[in-house]
Amino acid sequence: MIRFKKTVLENGLTVVSEAHPQSHAVSIGVWVLTGTRDEPESDAGVSHFLEHMVFKGTKTRSAFQIAKSLEQLGGDLNAFTTRENTCYHALVLKDHWRQGLEVLSDLVSGMDFSKADYALEKSVILQEIAMSDDNIEELIYDIYLEKALPKSPLGKPILGTVASIAAMKASKLKDYYKSRYSGNNLILAAAGNIDHQDLVDEAKKLLGKKKKVRLPSSRMKPSHRAFRHVEERQVEQLHFLSGFPSASFKDKHRFEAFIVNALLGGGMTSRLYQSVREKKGLVYSIHSSLNTFDDFGLINIYAACEPKNMRSVVKNIVREIQKARKRGITSAELKMYQTQVSGSILLGSDDIDNRMQSIAVNEMVFGKYKPVEQVIDEIRSVTPKSVKEYFEKYIDVGSMGAILMGGQAEAHRNWFFDFDFKRG
Image (cartoon, rainbow, N blue to C red):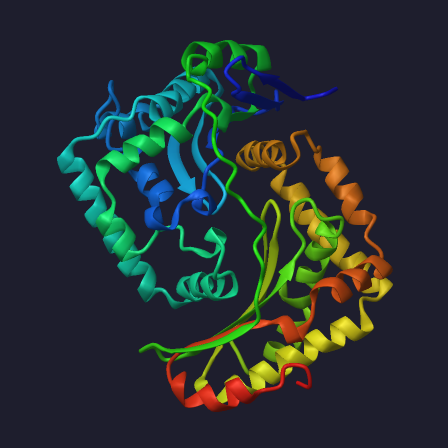
């Protein structure tokens, strides 16, 4: 039984759904195909700012009425902005999906805010930027992207900068909303106990009159550069973040990247966790993370420790990376990590929020549906040879970006800049 269906309305809006008849709930998302990487440098943070302003009011609802609309039904309403898109989403009981869709449609069609709301929310976002500067574990990733991708909007912070937000005018937000929140720049995705044709009929009523707008294609594939950066911060621990370019969503080695991330630092069985934390006790926290975009990818390795341990931590991280690149992965290791990654995906597939997001992302990236079973088959098709190919193509310590941030960072500048990552 094919649970997935897709319809494109006359105005370009794409409707995708995946039926889960056993569920008591429906997850709905309206995705705007605009994120940080689409913003001119002078308007950095406009996508995220706009996400905030949408909740300040519409032509038919106040901010409180928006908040109350689904909460009073036991549902949930929220939004998020990424570097490639913005999503407004709702989780509701199956009998309330029409109310959920109506509220989401109102948010992306009827935004209406006052000068007072605009000034207030600008202040809130400036506070949010200040708070993010206090969170070293988040800040270090933003700085990494800025240093590694200096010529790409993909490397800019989602929140924008103090200067760009302070200078942003209300008219800019309204113009951006009018142009970007157009029919052909939206995907409506739903997963749960819902009928596709009913969803399409409702979408035509609520969103079918949104205009098509010709949008310039400004996205260019970013180029990752090697760098080193040291920044003193008044915190106890010293934080380290390194990274390599990785496979994009469309790269044939996309699932090898999943396996390599699990192998290096994806969990407690990973090589870095076992070597640097369990066997040597040099850190409390060490892990790797995989970030995948439409045309670019990134694997990062993060560790935090007492400043006196950092040199040993960096040496051990580099040695483990070099060892993995030279030796590759054994058949037994590959089987374990395939099971680990597949298990995580299968467990996530039982969550309809995850399913809604998955079908939306697949539509954005591939323009088609990828069932969970196909993804699992692709993970199982990874071989020791293809992992070796991935290592050779992407994991080169000579192209690594690296940051030291935190307590006593400046005292470590000399050895850090002199350290030969290739020799370890």
